[in-house]
Length: 443
Image (tube, rainbow, N blue to C red):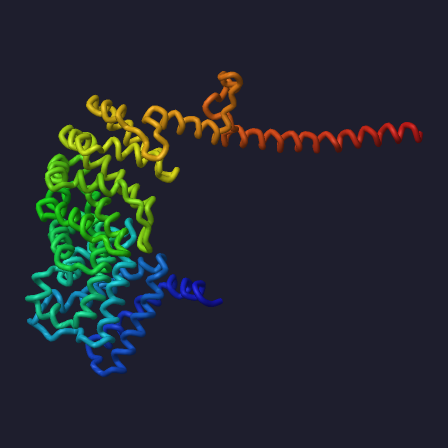
């Protein structure tokens, strides 16, 4: 036995996790030599292996009598310096060993708390201010004024910020109300404005995307100038390797504008409709993303930030949005055509869009809008094998989808199997009848 199987057997043993608690606390409190720190980190690496097995998480929540469970102990030490400031002697120095230990601590806590059903772990995490401590590394004010944060060198701070953002992006959906109460969304919005490098911006956008699904964040994110910040990112961060940043920006704008009039209005007033229209024509591909997912993000933003709002729809029509949408339908990848056609159907419900629909002509083939839709319909007929004879559909049962459906194929296969089994059942009986006739002839 070795590898993952050995780790799993070790992790599910009920005495392994409790046995690590006392030596780990002792070496953490009293170990100041380099060898002690190496031993401390090795124990932490062992805990990391154990915590990678979900079956071990229950042991991190067990406590002996009135003592804290090992998860509470780990969070206490992980956030001790951040929560106590200069009032006490810090546990962590700024050595590389201490940096790795802090990151290992955070990873372990994330592993235990990441389970959506582990309510007890979530409660401990909130009570011990784990997310509040992570936010100190992202708050531009705290980074400058808090000596516990500012003592780290810039490359070390960069590592801690990326790590904390990755953890936050996964934990926010589990405790969104708590994250809102500690103003985490405001810290993330300020962080996105402060730092301009690609790795930190991408990580911050992932964390903000996690908040954008919840209604109580939406208006407050707009009040933090997030709509303006995201539109600036889309418009100005166009260097190579940044396509995914713009895609994430459109995703966030889409979610915070969904069913939110205030954000739809802000999106329109800040020039978002023009920026969206320009990016619907974007065919760029780079190493950080691809044109298909980027176009999907723009169409989703079109649906949530513009459609359903009369003023925004009129503005979209005025900037030739229908023409751009028809251009996209003609040239986009097949995987996007259905979504783009759905958007076209939605905007055509606005009666003022008919004029723009009728005026459109393809720059590639000179087709008008009606001819384009007929051409797409004919292509679908060919793809599904629809057969005509002198303009009349031949298949009456399934005229629009004549190919056998999954259920028909399934039942046909079952009938074949049943037929084969019935045939095999008949063969022995037939053989036995032949034997009896042979016996009578011999007699």
